[in-house]
Image (cartoon, rainbow, N blue to C red; front, side, top):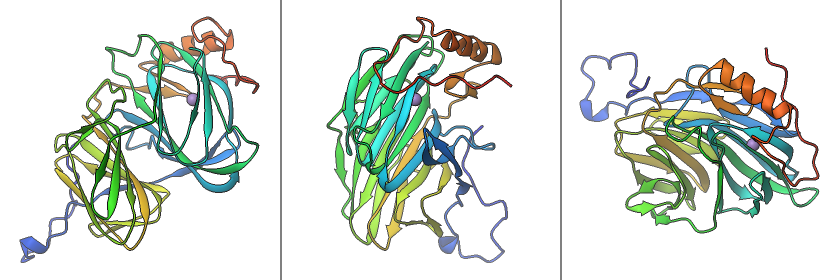
Length: 305
Ligand code: MN
């Protein structure tokens, strides 16, 4: 289900059309939780907003001056993990044999397909840490396929005047990210350097959401800050943001993902049977997932409800 989000109430009679506020945004507060002892703001999925394009999971952690990520080996199916940092470093190891440090400005993208396992940990005991971990649901055409891992140290950047946009996934204004995308998808990190206004072209047939990770921004009349996600619907060919100072926000979007998803723990599937099979395979440490070179203990799946 998707579509432009409009105000439920019609504007009062006599309202000057030019002064009618832009379509309101659908705001969702994060749920606070923790991953491997690290507090995170979980922005997706929400009960009434499961996906934005194929983006199906958004965790925002930090900023922290002294924190560490310690997530031992665990499995995934049916999704891409996307790791993007604003501060700190995270070492990724996986069952494909990848070992890759990711730093701010770089992108790690792992494709689970039918099964992969990985671990993520801070290379130092404690340090600055700020970033997001995102999941993208794989479509039926690729979700049972091979796992893969990509690291992108250089991503296209766009000068927006008061801001710089980095294209994590997809294409913005002709600038294409080299990262894999199995469906029409866009992910953009916008760094605002100074007070002012920044406009970003959007695909009007994509649905989009904005998540502020640092500072605060004004989207029309809506003041947005970390700890919530603002769903913008479809039908926008431009996003204009105003700020009073430096800020960083993410724009996530894509073609509406219309396949039914069943998400449980680290698995994105289509039904309970697939989830139960993946859980059993992981608990048996079957070859479907494979070993991960990590000193951290591997993580058992919780009991199935
Ligand atoms: Mn993971």
